[in-house]
Image (cartoon, rainbow, N blue to C red):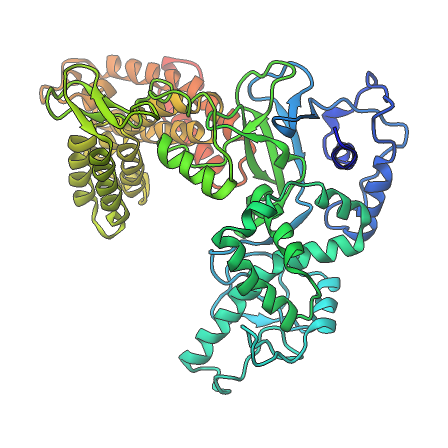
Length: 591
């Protein structure tokens, strides 16, 4: 290990030590310091407390005598670089750590954003009294736009040169009179929104620079993070940064920053940042140095949620001691080829995880194509050296280019599906099933879209046929996720929730209509439920409610750290089941 790498790991270890104040479960008397352990984790914490109080609250203090034993540790190998491993055997569902963002910035592409709370800006947004930075309301309850940032804007804004890409005026970070002073004109509003969007992009490097200037410890941690700057500078993203960000930073905000430094800084964010969906509805990107050390795998052994303003990381499967901790950087619903392409072009590495190394994608056959000749077999992806897809049941084969065009055509169909009504989306789903097969990842993607359409209205307003269709889709998706992303995963939690919601609604209707769930779900018009007495039907409904109990428990375990709506939706579905069971109280115990 070279001296610079050793120094970088030392700073990251110091940062890991500082997180013990947020992770009380780490505190232990069994850990003893080693010669290579960082000895000034408290100094790092003190600097953050002094210069970045929104990260470490005033009430939190770390006892100098405290010892801690986190379930994770940082390690290094020449092949993998720096990464996290389990420091002991970990159990599925176990909390590994909670980490607040070192820096929180607006996310590009989500539209004009309030710099304070990261919520979407209303049409009549106002500017900060000090610098004119866009805020959603005069007294926004966020804390992102600090006094230091406001002061930095005021001290750095200057008259833009004629060559500048922006027209940010001195005295107001976003005001622009180049389109006249008629603030009601469409031209003025359109130009103003462009300025806000540009400012959202500039906040990432600007907030990073401010923190690095304020805290040497934070600067050391940021510098220790991987950026892939050299490779990125040769790609289109490198040219984009030079033109779209470097010029405005220099010419409009008077930030003295070189091209290589900007490339390194933005590379750190693009390589390591996490999307943060805040409880207030805001969306941003957070820089989390420890969470970023989790390596990628398309079959991850951890899951993370935005929770209480930070990232909560849990073990999604049992993890033996010494095992590398992994996180999924890419959409689970993509097949091997598009996932690998995305990772190579955006993250600059080739994935060799178990799913990418298996043509069957862990038995899901997500990239296989249904054979049009025998109708029962699947055309399977060839080895890298081959270009022919061969059926596993007959002699049919297709050249790779033909398959690529079929998949491309189906993908284009799906991209236009947002313009279709539910009935037309179902027709499209049938067509894709016929072309590619029900097992194909594009079929799963469209199933997910159809499910969202069905459940976009209150569940009690969904007709019976749509509920039955949605339940069938959910069962298919749970099976698919069980192959490609097993364990306590977000998708499994979400699909279990929808399963519980739909089943609860169906059971309520069953009780009202004096039918059993089995008869409702049956395709046979002869309803066996009508041959049973009401007492027998109530007993069966009670058994169905009890059968949901393990699913409710598992769903609650998975979603317990999700700050978004699913937790509330689970409580509402459970309450519906409890109310139904109350009506049948004489037949059994409470749920």
